[in-house]
Image (cartoon, rainbow, N blue to C red; front, side, top):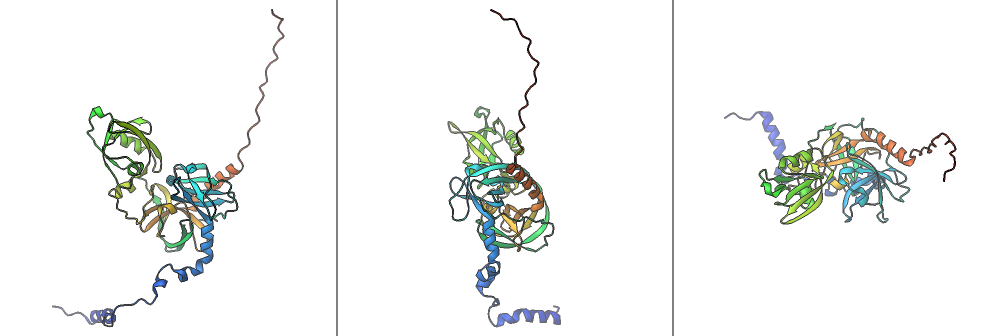
Length: 359
């Protein structure tokens, strides 16, 4: 047997020597090992700003569904579109005041953003957007959680496009549904899927999707393949002897397949749409799906993008500001100063020749 070299013995001695005197102890106190008060103290002013830059969007049941980023002093904001398919049914919670109603202005399915306005809200602090082109790998970034708490992390991967893999409803279908049933039978529903959230169950017979009849499982796939994650479709179905309908908000196919058995690998859930983006900033801030739509900022408080998708427990995507901000500015200008209506043109007509009186 070959004896270890002197250098190998020295390495083992250095590694094992501390263990001879008991357990290893970190030089920092437990409070200093977390985002504790001392760690965050230098960022106190940034914490206040972040809380002013964002607001929380609530569904009609009062549940937080997304975060709003203020982009105009008159209550204009942007957020993640696929999380708020019926935005005007939501309300906005800002500060200690009551929840306010919302007016949707324009929706962009390509970037998964929506521009809206909180009604009768003034004096908000809009974010200052800068380009994300100068971000350095490993750079510290911050974002609001629950539209108030400051979370920190780093720019963790190079900017890149994210390919889309289509939408999914989250059901397994019987490929040999008897013809007399006149539809497609569901034989399984994925946990935490669009179908499960909407209320579809195994043995339901799907009759129509998005207004189109479905007689075989291939037709279901064809209809859904033409949709984007986040789109809402009506599903008519039969359960037992009763026909009914409900609305299903589709999710990214990759999200549904990877989470088919309900394993919460994100430790807090993942976004309904997680792919098909022209370019993203990837970072590791500990956020939840309801934090999407909120701003992503540098340590000077300048927004380099908007958080757009919680992908897993260590990955969040944000849209770089240069991708969407020029477009949002144009939409704001049109809404603030809509084109004036052109005056009605009077048609010139030839004088009618005088006719003799008739009896």
